[in-house]
Length: 142
Length: 142
DNA sequence: TTGGAAACTGCAATCGGTTGCAACAACCAT
DNA sequence: ATGGTTGTTGCAACCGATTGCAGTTTCCAA
Image (cartoon, rainbow over all chains, first blue to last red; front, side, top):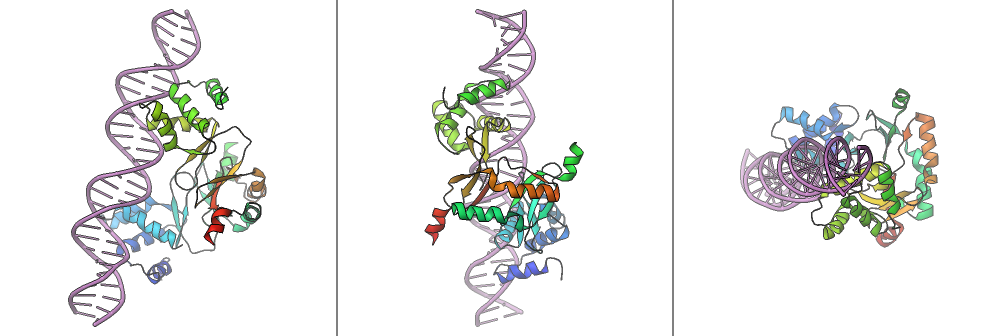
């Protein structure tokens, strides 16, 4: 079973078709560790199947996102995607080097509960990501 | 002195030119309370000066943002803008009704400090905004 | 008050992302 | 195995936002 085999199963279980295009997009996602951009996915699939259209890549990613099979990472303009395999986590994205680091949802618990208790506002934290400056870049800058 | 008079002064002090287009964009921002979208600003300016181009509106807002004279509110696709006059605050934006509510930076202090202490990551919180479901919409939904 | 340098604008081209549509293909029932 | 339903794709048009460029305007210095 490949790294994205389970994701293919879940797609099918949810009643969607297993098209070659979708399989290739998922293979691209599974092929590189961490987050990967649309252009990167497109180039990779296009190399082996030149008829692929960007629209299909976007539609596939949209679908995978709705089914909670990928996470979308939005910080700083262009979105990047990651197969969901591990436990839920959030991301810190460096505005300088663009690297992403994970952190646990527990870091947002207090914030989450205070918004609910004091405003009755239920924040969407599932795909939460925060931009900033990572320690390496901060050190370098000094 | 109009509501945006001080902002005009700051623009000039920073060495930028006071063009009629910029004055009109600022007037539009000052004319409505709360956050306002680019299309709204454009329509308003266009009504009194039909030669205005969207590009100019975008460029003006970009400039005002860099100079910290407006805040940009990004949640949910299209950006909205607000003149900075009041103290610093963050926003909750309802994914259902699109209304925005303010909350104090103190709500993020614990989160902020933990990222610094445990990862050395300095998050950008200046324009922080979080999407979610407001209490009115949550009630209505039940 | 006026001349000139540099900033700014409008225009048009462009770019990333989305959508309508007709042709096509996956998949289930037979 | 095969046919029909219907989800999916590629294409092209489109949309909001950004950028290069040439002409225009602001604003300071003289």
